[in-house]
Structure formats: C-alpha cells, structure tokens
Length: 154
Image (cartoon, rainbow, N blue to C red; front, side, top):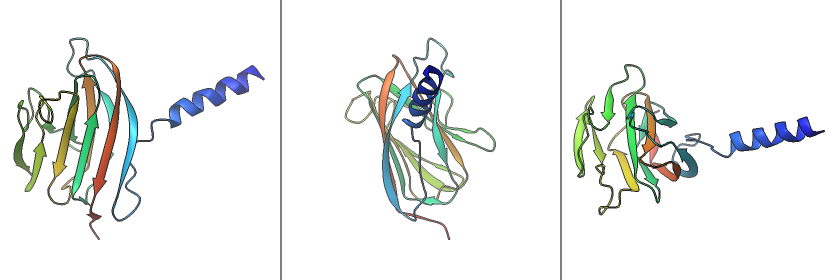
C-alpha cells in the first residue's frame, strides 16, 4: 500500500510542471517551473520547454520573486540566442536582434522595469526553427511561466 501511495505522489509531482502546450492554433498558457540556483556554473539550468518551429507571435514571460535568467537556444545546432554572456541577445537592457531572419526581443537580464525576477522573450514572426528555453536563478525557487501565441504556420 505504501509503495502505491509513494508512486502516486511521485507521479503527481512530475505532472505539476506542465510545460508548454501549443496544441491549438492560437492561445495562451501558464505553469509553474522550479528554478535551480546556478552555483557559479552558468550552464546549470533547467529546461523550461521546447518551442516548435512555426509558432507565430510568441511571447514568454518568466516571473519570479528571485533573480532568474532566461535562456533560449536553437535546438538543432544549440545556437545561444538569449544567453548571458555568449548569446546574440545578452545585455542588461531590452534589445531586438534578428535570428534566421526573424526579430527576437529580450527584456534584458535586469528585467522589466528593473525587476530582475521578470524577464520576457518575444518572437515577431513564426519561429524559424525549434527552440529550447532554459532558465537559472541566482537563488533557487519557483517561477511562473506565462506564454501566448497568435497562430501557427499551415
């Protein structure tokens, strides 16, 4: 009996973190994500989720009481798109730069209005390739992930 109860608890904790769901033509979603402390290793991140190619008008907000940093990689070749200090977008302030012909906006690592616990990424057109979003914190904790998209290719 205890084994079944324990297994049930483990399954519940796995399902709490839903991740991205781009199942409909357009929409939005929200979930909670555990964030790891980087512990001096800026590659010590958690995978927030994968973003398929062809998602239009994407915006992702990561909101936490802790200082968290968003990372965005091209899944196929691991290009560092949003990544401090080696990414295409890497500064403390909001910036827009193209990647594969599509403009990507990043809030900057100082966050929205200087709130280091609130960062965002926007992709102006269809995602040109599959992306992986990751995150790390200067302290461990949880973040709310809000995301929305306006359509899909085809």
